[in-house]
Image: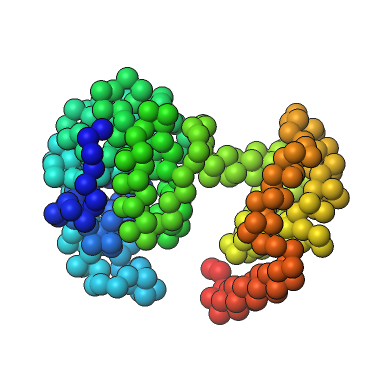
Length: 322
């Protein structure tokens, strides 16, 4: 990959988006809201006509909740919907592919993007599970190709997994990180390629167990959703799973692993899994947690968590679910 100039040195800051589905439109909101010009390509004529309407509706909703700093029309005016990928790529510093999750389609799209885009343009896929190695390994410009997998919708859920292939250059990774962070996203670098990355690995583990619980007659679909929505969900909206168990147990995560590790191992064995929390693994996780939160700060952090949950409960009471 040719040396990439800092984004600020690129006049115009044009972003290309390939695909006018829900993720493509959502990324258009992200980048246009951040002040970039966006060219979104969509080959289907009917869908091209729908994109501006859907985009305007999303921006109007954001305005109603005071989540944008400019008029919705001003932001929408930065987005141009075009028919051809070549138009979307022209002048872009970054291209975000958002086509359906089909390997052959991504292979064809990236072969064309690699042909169309100048060498310094980073090409990112919004793939949910397919790695860049699976669709770009044989391309001449593979060093500027990577996955950027967002939460859905990315204009509300800012986390974006950046998943480089072994062949992706550090310059491409850095440009993607800087661009996304500058657009209000929270980029997370995934250290190695793995199907589903981190987001869908975690989501998939919960979904697999949810399906099993319904299958086995343990709980209904609605009750599983209720336990996540009103139990796990509020807590996880404040802290993640490691911090949750760290704060739930006196003595922190090491104490939790000692007390609950065997039970979780038995639960996993019921599903054919053999992934025990070994002493070395517990020591690694404990070390990372204690670096983030020494035990002497544990009680203060527990109180902080409780106050955050109180604020969430107050908000829910003020804005009851439909």
